[in-house]
Image 1 (cartoon, rainbow, N blue to C red):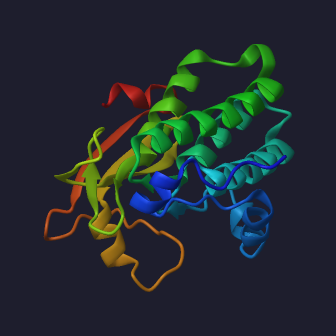
Image 2 (spheres, helix red, strand yellow):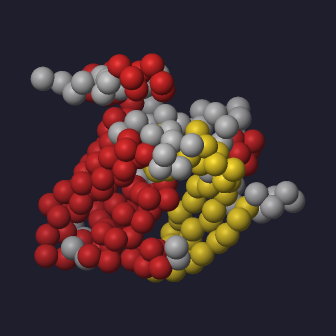
Length: 218
């Protein structure tokens, strides 16, 4: 039996929450098949629910990582981290956000263990959890504001991080407000992040560290 498309009538009434079933998810991802199979291609789902689309995209990306890098645990690990870091989601309900993060991590970790086996590293796992925490956020994609755990909109803008390997094992994180990303990309279907600071200060912070230690820059 397939996954239910609604959790409750109340959630449908209050938030218009209806989940897309697996068949439609796969068919829609097939429309951009080449992009879903590019490891560093960025995707944003502005009403991600518990991650139906994001899970499918991550699964496809990790299959490419395995195909290309399974002979080297270190190369696989780096590119699997990059794949996870390229996927973004927003949802207004905190239980969906938490479920989505956990679902994405389980998909990632299952593949990581299958490929790297005894070479798996717990710091890398924590790094991926941290990346997913920053990339999948509780907020209102219409107002571009964060939402608290009680479902109340705050004055805090949604902030996303761009992740990129710059040299060797060094990963760079650059933080931007969601509003600025939309302003830069309002005529593009896929999110593209420009890491050049703007005159308005919407570029927020930049960090560079070993990819296994990105969680140290909270």
